[in-house]
Amino acid sequence: MLKLARWFDASWRLMRADRPIGSLLLGWPTLVALLIAGEGNPPLRTVALFMLGVFVMRSAGCVINDYADRNFDGHVQRTRLRPLAAGEMKPWQALVLFVVLLAIALVIVLQFNTATILMSVAAAAVATLYPFCKRFTQLPQVVLGVAFSFGVLMPFTALDQGLPLVAWILFAANVAWTVAYDTEYAMADRPDDLKIGVKSTAILFGGYDKLAIAILQLTTLALLVWLGYLLHFSWAYWAGLVVIALLFMWQHYLIWYREPQRCFQAFLHNNNVGWVWALAVAVHYWF
Image (cartoon, rainbow, N blue to C red; front, side, top):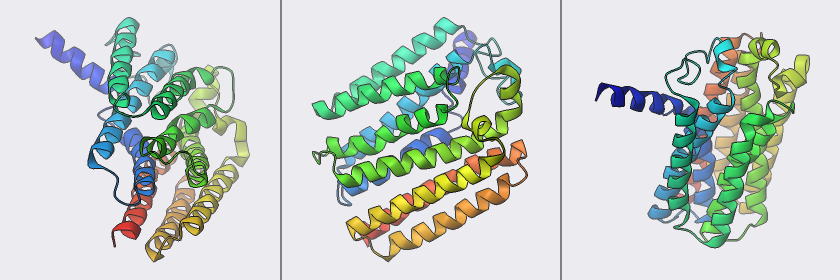
């Protein structure tokens, strides 16, 4: 019984369920897309299935990420105690857990139409590819951005809205935002990544990392302004964008001296961006 409890605890941590920031960063834009596609009133069953899918797919992504990095995480201060790196789980056990999570995700997505199912397959493929991209490209954050942004397209197909222009604007805005915050995340690991040969946008941008993040955040805001204009959003949305701009400015204060811990704090701070964005859209539709 004790052995089973230890395995469950290791699996829980391998899925990063004890650290929900990834699920939140994936979930907020998905909720925004559900609100827009459902014109403020998406079916509760659809919302519940998508939020469950967010948790399951983020968990699967963390598992395959740690499997891919199992020979690297032990050399990085922040990740050396992860279950695979610490020897709490065997690689084959992680793969079994990954397959189980994908099976659960498949059961969830089978509740929707064919277009949504096909899109989920593409999302799973990109998410699986992401951790291995760190070996051969300096742009793994872009791959992650695409993987995370399928969640803003699928609500439109699930609610039989097709893929209108606003869906693609959301997609592009979320890709830009994801690359920005994951570059902040990579800045925290840059010294270790340089030692072990892992690639990232933080390494690619080098001394222009803060400028690149600013450009990505401004691109995000510009796309969200375009979205608000097309959908004739009310004052609540525009107030939300002002708050988001201020939150981005605070992140630049945090990363100014490129201190790893403060860069990681800036990454975590993006949860505030997400809930402000979702709240602004919700207030527009509900009030």
